[in-house]
Image (tube, rainbow, N blue to C red; front, side, top):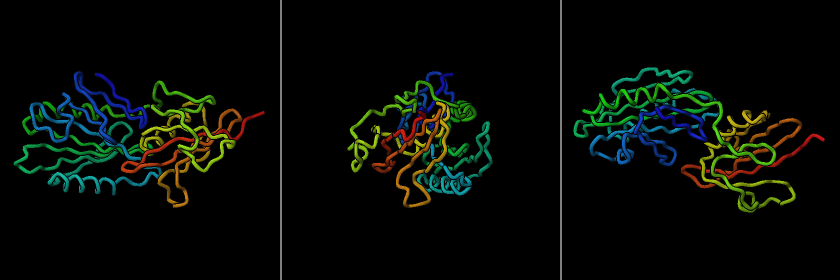
Length: 265
């Protein structure tokens, strides 16, 4: 089976041969053919599995998130809860539920929530009722294969060995830190990744590239005074600041600023 690995969030799963996947904003959808990736597709062999990650930096209990998720999906889809039960996949733990869709829609809807290491995965499987036998086995194997990788392959680094997110390019200082002087030593990059995904990327990749994280300030933060995410990291006598500068919204995206603050010798 082919394996999908999200380059920022770091979750992986195996999906059936011949299936396709597509990024849809914060969601990654998997389906047996391209038309079925669309949420409103009702044609032949309809159905898909969707995964939306969420950052949980303070490791808050997931029960309130599960209640919110199942309620929101129920209202959005006009569905009723049939029952929920615990769900465990490797070291990921959470809940799952089958939702009863209106009879006229002829749809089956299953949702799940799995959490590990400060990341929550929202899962949703939908397909026609008569396709349950075809979809349930494939989707179950996909969900049971979910795991987080130790590192993602092919990550680029800057001149100091600090990892750089995929599809981030060097940019003029004023494009990221408009009120900052060039002599402060910032290297700046622009990209389009959600700031939550960038935080997941650096929490995983800094240690994998030999950097010890001595401090981490999430965004959004409990303190309104912390207006961006940042990491303080150390390696071989060097100290660095990695700042993720928020812009846009729904989702909030992040640009990148890196500064080496101290080098040995």
